[in-house]
Image 1 (cartoon, rainbow over the protein chains, first blue to last red):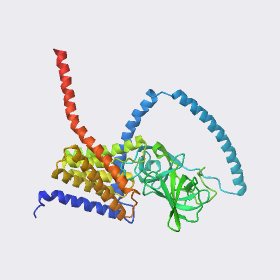
Image 2 (image 1 turned 90 degrees about the vertical axis):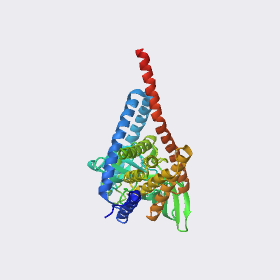
Image 3 (image 1 turned 60 degrees about the horizontal axis):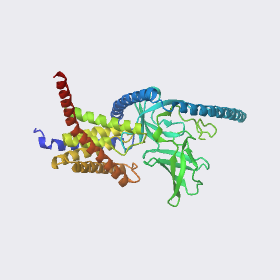
Image 4 (image 1 turned 135 degrees about the vertical axis):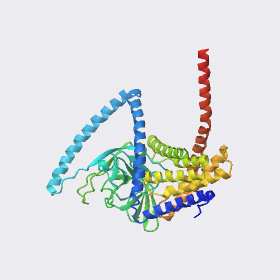
Length: 284
Length: 173
């Protein structure tokens, strides 16, 4: 049998690569589980390199910030001390309120609030492509992280875990074009789906035309998508557009500042049974 | 040796993109360092390394971006192969032709990526023309700069070495 002409070898290789990619994509369409071995292998190798690279950068930065960059430290210290005092007072107030709420809860015979089990994770890398909006975290399967776990910070929803390897994981940001979350307008309870716009903002769709809302309304997770628990703050209504006769589309500004993501929390515990009285985290 | 350089360029591009996005604090950057690396590989080493480099970069981006594996892989493989062919058919040693090649590769990549995403029912940008134009110009500017750096650096190294030798000679005399 004659070997293929060497002049055409590149062409054959091109066809083989294209067909290989099409088969790879086809294998994921429908099931969306994909070929785990290839994906896991690629992810493990690349995130390990990213983790090491960020470790080196963070080390240099740590030395710089810890020893050399001492300007304004005294002023910062004073300001933080004042903030600390204010927060302690606030904490006392919240504790007093919580005691009252617990007493009421006991009075009404409701279950005690289950605390969320979280894992703090550092962001070791940002998106590796302009087509995706994701972050690489330094916590993986060994730390209890699993696919589809919600990722939050102290302000609100950051995204969800989409890929996990042994010591790292990838979280898709809620502003990614392919991200979605079931949400409600907190004030009125109007339900819809929040989708990433790809430009750093969100849009809420499938809202009823009769749903009541005003600019500035808070948008929180509905807890019906089996990913995000109920009541996590997502964003603030920024603009309202009519989208056909029956639905309206709402532009939502995310509350999380994605430019300041240094560390996040992964919610390790599964979402509790949907009960209006048993929220772990409630948006304020 | 070529294979090693291709893999090194791919890893460097992915690390740089991830680290810069993290350090600059943006959810994602307009510049696609992966595509810049693919075009550089294709122009420097030819269409087959361009094709394979594109496959590696694309699969890496798909795996780390949480997207469908193969989507960016196919788009970048096509862009790398086409750029390699363009590199053999046209003279692309000047700034303007190089700029146009980077721009063309970005348009081709975006065409394949957006086309496939639409076929698969995935969401695409709300303003694709604007986004692709900005990305194309950014990629082209960075790409031309990368080529210039690679061209300037050997000369700079030789000049630095010559200066050092002259100083050593003066010291001994």
